[in-house]
Length: 137
Length: 176
Image 1 (cartoon, rainbow over the protein chains, first blue to last red):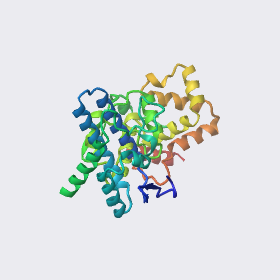
Image 2 (image 1 turned 180 degrees about the vertical axis):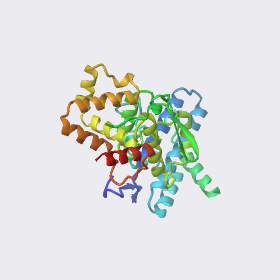
Image 3 (image 1 turned 90 degrees about the vertical axis):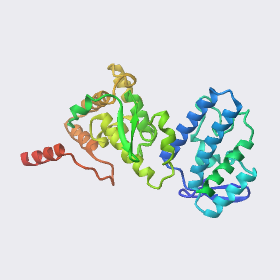
Image 4 (image 1 turned 135 degrees about the horizontal axis):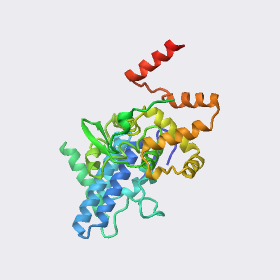
């Protein structure tokens, strides 16, 4: 991912996008948030509740990724692609690195992955919800 | 030799700090927890704060995760927390922890042989034991260097000197 030490870039949907590196504090908060969501997911059987937890987690992660994008044009491009469903949060995972790892799944590349029973469309919903929230503001 | 704040040493394990106009409780009970939290990032101490906040506070903290000055405020708070947890100047505790982490197998091993287990001790007691281990292993010159190294705040960090520290410095100056 890194081209330059201060402004790493990532190619997403044919476009090279520059990000700031997340701070150690942001990384530790992502880890705490993901661990918390995962323990909620483990104890939840209801599909709707699982979907809600996952959407909430995705919106929060997207908020951080959003704040790390350097150019406004790139931010709009990524939001469009998320809403259209062309890309999902897995594509953006390298931005925050493998720091957000599953505590009980040592060989998982990263933990930001929707549980099996949650359809990919929940991530699209998250992006839409985030965009709506932003437009209202 | 650095003198700890005796009152601070008698405080309970819970450390309460203020950041973003509210208080946050850190519940690292053992020396291991504090050392691990510091070791996560020795420069920003992000493992201490916000890494050490309670699960129930994660959502509240999330509201500040993208604030422009969040990193600076987190680091300042983490330093205050380490100072309170150790009962000493935060940089003294951090310097000692850094030094111990650099040769963890040796220092932890030597301490374990003496019955000092960081998993079952509070941070102030463990710091005392680690300091004494290093101090005993030095000659007179080495001890002076050890004290000097541990008392040195990180480069570029301005620290407020306590009235007690200022008085001690003046006394030392007058004694020369």
